[in-house]
Length: 332
Image (tube, rainbow, N blue to C red; front, side):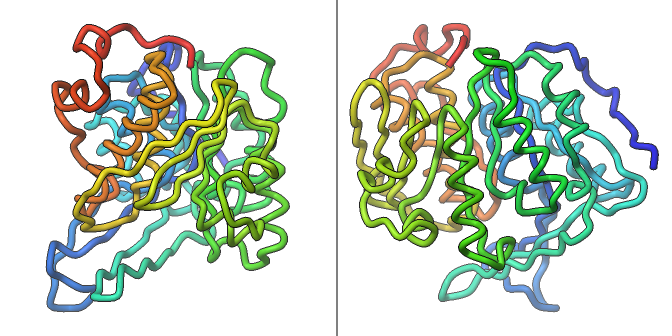
């Protein structure tokens, strides 16, 4: 098999963050529709890691997405939409033998059901050899999630290499646990593997609900007692609050009240907001507030990605000046 490396961007570009994982084509009904023959639909790129990259780019960062797509119109749609949001796609590879994955949303009165068609996808064929290209691109942050290691054994080996064998001090490794039960048929395996990967990261994001499901914990402090190695652990408790454990101590920020249109993608938006704050050198509380603010934008959209608030609004929420916001990003 001969993979095609895209050449539509400079692979030597220094990035603030590179996000590695699968991006699929999301099929979602227009507002008010269902997954039926009477509704109209829109196609959008959607994937945990590329969502983070798109939000980081919207927040003014140089963000790249690394992954594989099929040699099909859906793969072209994914790459085109990411590029349109300002995401660097120079690390994307095209697999001529595997398809781009698809997922469909079916909104209903009891919540949204999601149907995935990703078995044997181009992204599932990623392996440790792909890490060489990712590691060669300078980036302050490497962002991964627990979705990728669940796609295949070779993807798990890729994440293992990226998260565990990176040169010390070269970049901050961010890991969102992102437990997807459908991808991990055996809960005990998921609990063991995701904990092991989380313990090897520098920054970890996890929802209290998924931590309870995986590790039978009840409170953010219980999660920290278990995930005790990362320098920073952020535990998100839905509409209640987010709690950060770091060398600065314990920081709690209540969630912002928002009208929820669609919850999918909010966790990725939160991670992007927090990472943006870290790249800008904001204090722990401001990082959490920015996470909540960006997550709120995602919650108000039927798509995984949404327009972020304008800079004056962001600065007012964070209590900073526009000069502080536009300060060049640096190491997190």
